[in-house]
Image (cartoon, rainbow, N blue to C red; front, side, top):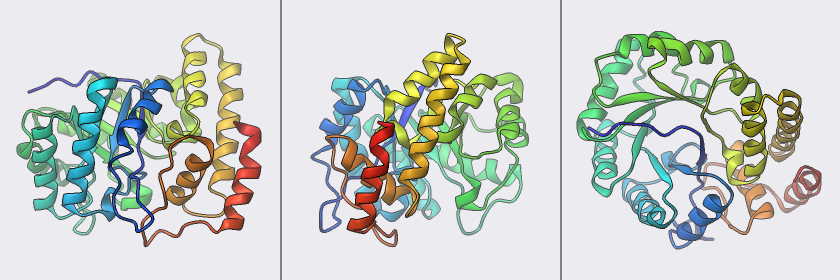
Length: 300
């Protein structure tokens, strides 16, 4: 069983769709290089930003394969999110991720027959772990979207010794008190990746050391500067950059949902065009895109 040692900045990459909303994998090598050159050493495939839950199993496999092959040049860590689908499909995606050489796996909870206790969640993740017994597994905690709001400190404490491949969580919540407790749970043995772009500075000041933030695709320099400033004990500088990043996120998401607005911002700011979001997500109108462009310029 492989150990999980990665800590730091990870971009939850977008899935690039063509104009007919079919999957485009040809741009992925360029996308990987862009992130690498921007100081981002790791990517999460098929997270919320990647719209994995809106894709077929075959599409998800195809995209994961291209990311794994693309990072052979850039040496980035690839985490693949395998949940958000029926258990047999999640297990198949976990097996596939291990087969193609993904460095780690992330998994959402069951989204309909939801777990309501730490042990129910542990039992579900055991089934995912068994499908990929040699690949580190992390849990994706995003209660605002999944409505699975199990206390992460209790879950992590209870999980010790139960899931052989389990190494931590992606913590997408604004509750930093619970996040801090999760960080310290089980004597700090687990990785906790913050998933909140607007809380990087206070979280790192509390002791977090890793993030999975959508804005790393678009304006990665902001997060890099925040982390560097915290590490050098320049708290005021970190807070100032966090203010700019938070303001940028507010402007980006003002007229729409998280994924389509963030995609529109990436298409404007970077050389990588990630296309539109797949329905049922609603993309921005031309006027809304112009407003986004105008407002975002001063925070770049």
